[in-house]
Length: 359
Image (cartoon, rainbow, N blue to C red):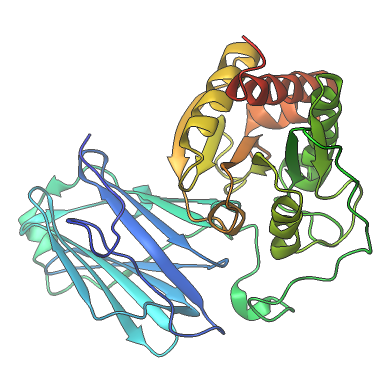
């Protein structure tokens, strides 16, 4: 499959940098032509709006409270989607337009939006465009609004803390590290007033990942690894303090543990995702492969992402999405203490494998 994230300075890639600390940033976008799938990543939670326009048919996606920070970008394609345009529509809105080739249209009721809160990524799946010139070129059809599920995080305008400022954290003293000991930082995501994703039956991400994280740390300690948790209880802890713990302890790896989510209307989406940014690719591959071998969950691949805790740590770092709290299958698994223990054991074994201490 030919697809790629768009970043600047590299052929076919475009990095979208922010110009305002008060707005979210559209960091990257990718269109997978063979699957008619658009992926959008932002650095803060965003709630899109979408509509379908005609003559020619085009899907218009607005990201309120989002800055692009670059001139308009246009990508010409070969196929039923002919052009993608990304631009700053107004002061507070970034607009993405997917224009179909002449004569083609889509059923707006079949356009699907889903959201990953940890990745801050929207995935938009388009149905296969159909050749229907009478509809596509009609001047009589009005625009049709497309339903977008509510993101399980608040948009940036509703966040109480200014962007870039660490959240309040408890006073804590880092443990003394004996000389020569290997240090691994285990980071259970969210905590305190931030429950993370909330899924089926009120299943909370923070409860799941704290339990798994504690078990991972305990298992590593039994193997002679000094494992330090960024949090060991339900309290408010920002992203920068998590990074600082790993840096101050000179950790050899950083492993952040999360649970995924999309709309509650998509319980069919289940499975494991593991993210890395730069030097964490080998660590991500090893942990991901070990979980698949030991736990047997659906494989949603290893992916690259610009999460704060991944790009601001100097050691290999990964973020493990242990399952979807909104998934019909995953929610049952994540509620089960036995499953969480197996997941923790697989993560710990993956870390040990990476460090050359296990088979």
